[in-house]
Amino acid sequence: MAITVIETKIPEIKIIEPRVFGDERGFFMESFNQRDFTRLVADVHFVQDNHSKSKKGVIRGLHYQLPPHAQAKLVRCLSGAIFDVAVDIRPASPTFKQWVGVELSADNKRELWIPEGFAHGFVALSDFAEVFYKTNDFWHKECEASIRWDDPDLAIAWPLDVLPCLSEKDRAAPFLSEARLFQ
Image (cartoon, rainbow, N blue to C red):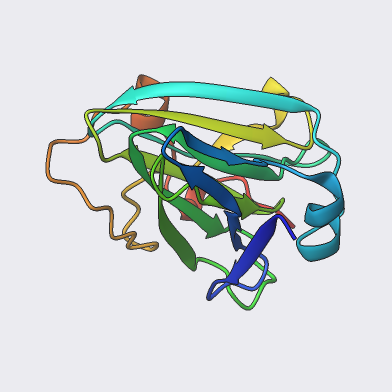
């Protein structure tokens, strides 16, 4: 088996640990295997890959897409380290407003599975961090939505030791109470 699945406090969110083969030359790992992923996590068909680079303290998020183009994501950090967050934004869910945060890094090679119905964001912990993620639907501007990263109703414990750096779009994001949510 190429992956180990680690459960989180929100059952739908999973931490994926790939099997890594390392020696004096470096390492090898399967970053994604459709058969293992379907059997252990979810049956999903990915259609788009995204890649970003951020300097320390950059917060990206909390982003999501609404139906009919909701997105599930499989996120990993290729270089550096991030604190990655998934927030349940499904009002009918027993875990509504709860969040899971995990450090993803080039060293630990972990991935975070975030299904549809969750907002996603991260903060770069290292001088620079490159993040790569797969999505199961294409980006659609009309379905795009976001929530403020510092919403007090969510009380996300961002591990910040520098002032956060945000895009104008993320600074203008609404609070959860004003955001468009999954129904």
